[in-house]
Structures are given as C-alpha cells and as structure tokens.
Length: 372
Image (cartoon, rainbow, N blue to C red; front, side):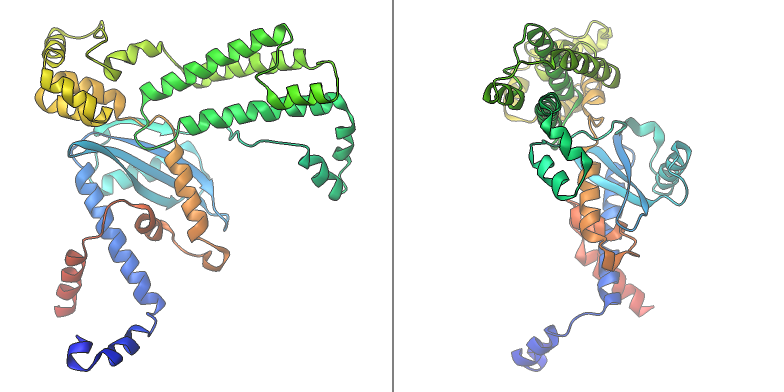
C-alpha cells in the first residue's frame, strides 16, 4: 500500500521500523488461539488419546505439557494440546484438575479419550568413559581415586555399555505414530536380549559389552564383575517386566498384517464376518501395502466399522511420552533467563504446531473488532 501511494524507498524505511513487543505478543497470541481453535474443532466429537508429563523450566516454574493424538481425515495426527503452569504441588489430583478443566472448557469429552500415556520411569541415558576421571581430578574430587581400582573401572565400563543399549531402545521407541504393537516388539526383543546376556555372562562371555571387554583384554585382567553383572541384569529383567506390562506380542499380529494372521479369538460374530470381508478384499490388500498402518485401519473403519474400530482402539493410544520431552526442549529454548516471566503456552503452540494459522480469519476478526 505504501509503495503504491508513495514509493518503494518509503516502504523499505517503514519495513525497517521494528514492531513493538506488544504488537508481536498480540500476533503470537492471535495465531496461537487460531491454531488451538482449529485443533479443538478437529478433536471434538472424535476419539483421541493423551500424552502428558510435567517438568520444571529454567525459572523453576512447574509445567504440565499435554499432547493429543486423533484421527484427522485419512490418517492420525499428533499435536500439542496445551502447556499449563502448575500453580501448587504437582500431585496427581492437581494434574487431573488442570486436564479436566481444559477438556471441559474446550468441549472435549472424557468418554472419547481411549488412552492416557505418562512417563513414570526415571530417565536413563548417557555413555560414560574415563573422561569422568579427568573431570573429577580437575575438580579435586576424592572420587577420582576410584579409577585406580580396576574392579571399579570394570563396573563402570559395564554400566557404560548397558546405558548405551538402553539408549538404543529408547531411540527405537521414539518417532511419530509409534503404536503399542511397535512398543511390544521392541520391549520383547530387549527382554530376550537381557536373558541372552545373562546366560552368556554366566560362562564368562562378555563380547556384547565392548567397553568392558576391551578394558579387560587391554589390561590382561580377569573378569571379576560377573556376579555383579548377573545381579544387575536380573534386576533389569524384573524391572522391565513390571514397568512394561507386556502380553504376548503375537496378539497384535492381526493388526500388523491381517492378511497373514489369524483373527483374535474374542471377536464377536459381526466382527469376524467383517474380518473375513477385509481379508477377502483385494483392494484392501493393495492399500495395506501402500499405506501406513494407521491410515490403512482408518480406511478399514470407513467400510467395516466394527472391525476397524477394534484395531484403532489399539493404535490410537500413545505408546511413550517422547513428544512431551520434545515439548520441554522447546520450552527451554523459548523461556530463557531474559524471558523468565513469559507465559510460554502461546509461543510454544505457534513454534511447534503443524497446523497453520488462518491469517484471513485472524485479519477479518481484527477488522471486525476495529470497526466496533
């Protein structure tokens, strides 16, 4: 407009004038609210699952981040539902109150929620090396003397190997559209490996633990930490079996490939009839080969609602809380010490949402407000 009425030079000078903090804040707020409105419209009156976690940011504010997974058109979508500050103690009652209040205000129904995923485990990550000794020595810590003990270093080498393996499992469970059948496969595989490592360790075979094996061979030592390894691996087995209440992973075979697996034994007569229809449908077979698992079953539900709904009830719930960790990483980038008082929800939603703001609607709303 300025270029037309005046000239390009004047327009360039005007563009160089920075917007005020309030102007930027209002634009972020408007975009955030539009994205939130779009999201709630898509989730409302359909099935969804929630993923939630709480953490403390750089300003020591306790935040609750909640993501939602829902069916959007022909596929599943995962989006940030909200990020709220926890006003009191982060008790289960307080967290439920925050979630319940948001769902009521957004007109989302608890009865449409098919699953809730939270992270109750302690974080396990990292790979340690002898750089720790250098660090401890530079810091003047008495713990540095432990590195003169070969048995201590052997235990540390074993732990560094095991944490690396745990890290690998953790990464395998991350990614978009990670479902319970996928989780069952990876966890079952790791529990079986634990048993293999335990049995091999009992006969002195530690080739699966590279750092430990290298340290023993390089220093021509005897492996005296076998009993400690056995106790630790046994404890890990019990922990994984208790934390991941896994059933036979074969029970999900009919979801992974309905054309090769047998149907579940507890299907109703109508569901089994639809199973026969699906597996006899050559078009469905072709679609299965070209679509994602979620997209395929969403398509099945449209034609065979009983059977498709049963599969989606397993695919829709979150399997891990990885999205919340991504959200907290974004919070750390946005809410710095220079912006410690920032109510981060609007900025976070605009930064990470896959939904695009509807600028035409935002502009028309502003115009209507100005005219009034």
